[in-house]
Length: 553
Ligand code: FBP
Image 1 (cartoon, protein in one colour):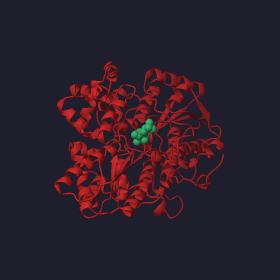
Image 2: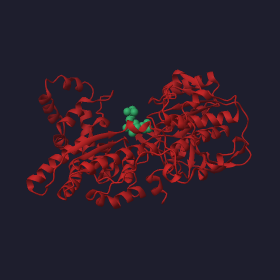
Image 3: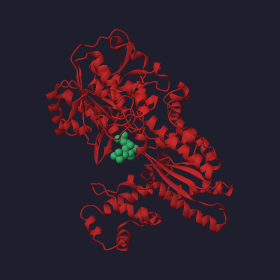
Image 4: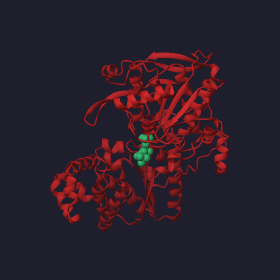
């Protein structure tokens, strides 16, 4: 296999473990903390998880290892979207497994949760693992979005586990996958299978976090990668002085990625979905807000700028969500065929006009033509509009352009407006993990095995105090049920891990809010540059501004 120089160099990197996990397996002991309660709906969640609810917090400490010696055969899966550092979770898990006993086995189930159902796996060896150390991607075993949630699936998983003599399963995933990990752990406990289940918090979106989980892995590297690119664009904008760049960044629901990129690069505009929802902003209000910045800057001779748009923005706009719900209804079931059979767009437009409420049609009417058509072309397998495919960066730039035309005619806007569009998503999900993510992920994996070794199940691998140097990180585990509440999903009440949205009274948003008016008018860009892997710790090991602000640093 041909290797790039950085790939070779990264193979040699030794990820840093929390101080308490250093010094060898024989020196890792456990401290059992207080019993836990779920964040809400305690009685309901307790009833749903009779075998795994209320377990104690776990912290590891440096002392003689008291865990029982037994042969461990562990299965691991990667679930959902790629996030930098996933390979290192598996490397850390593997190293802890083998350091405990060379005869222990780690099986990687391929292609995500479906690998467990289809019993498609590989057994990891030193040689195989070494080729993936400190690299980005999930290609070590692949990932997938199949959900492990039904009783039938759990039965199959139990059979597969029995066949291989699995003692534990590690699920590396986001809030949904870890919710399912908790349900699987409960099933395994209720059926006395002896199989433990441990989760690891993954997602570049950053929305799996709470008072125990300070950050999901991958968020650091992905946002640093996007911020590098945004900074480069800012510099280009400031050099050429002729374009407004509308940059959509990934994050399908929460706006953490957009906010972190804004804190890193100080763009003129950054929309935050959670704020749009709280203020019940309309599309026109959002476009006007951007146009105000373009106008002020243009009138000062600065005909350029940068606007960051979170991927999930339109779903936070109440009038737009209503429109989507009505379109889904309009084309439900057989009505899609009826609609598709209409001869041309004019006939379809008329069908839409008659089918939507007056209010929603008014919203539909102000959308640029390409967005209107997108709403009817791109449907998911259930026939619903695929909101994530809407090019919101183009939607807003087009609405801003129209608004500026009006302002020009009214004589208030004297500048020129040219726009460019970008979508940064896949560019960041498989980047070489930053030192932070390489260390954090390796620690999460290593720690996951210590939880297995000490008999825990239904826990999330927890490494905290992560805004400090790795030496001071605290390793342990938290019952997943502690993070759960009951939410209505697809018409049913379900126990789920609470998704973390951007908190409007949280320090990261407050900092942004306090500075954005200045950034909207002046050119206050900051250029973070590329992730640095080698060099001084203050350049290479720093994590996100979001975490620093949350920690009051
Ligand atoms: P996870 O929630 O599974 O970590 O994935 C997040 C994400 O990267 C989103 O930011 C994005 O909207 C989505 O995945 C894209 O998914 P896909 O890879 O299926 O296109």
